Structure formats: C-alpha cells, structure tokens
Image (tube, rainbow, N blue to C red):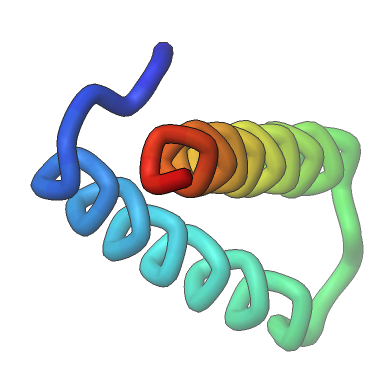
Length: 67
C-alpha cells in the first residue's frame, strides 16, 4: 500500500499510534507467553514496521517533490 494524500498519512499515523500502544500493553501483561501470544506479537510488530515504512516513504517522496 502506498499513501496517496496527507489525509491518508494522518490516518496511518493514528493507526500506528494505536498499534504501538496495544503492543506495549501486551508486552506488559503478566502471565505465560504462549505460542499463540508470540505469533500475535510478531504479527503486531510486522504491522507496526509496515506502517512506519509507509509513512517514511510518503514523507521522503513529499520532501523530494517540495524541492
């Protein structure tokens, strides 16, 4: 997915913020770490990384066009 507008950028930033918050809460949860829990955390981390990369690409592209 490639971000196409500043509105999409803002929406993606908000999604990223929510995912990071959820990830931090899950890390802090006490209890045994099951295989399913680990897989879920890996999936969350992949999504966080993907959104971070999309934001970085959009911002780099926007800076390039601003020159």
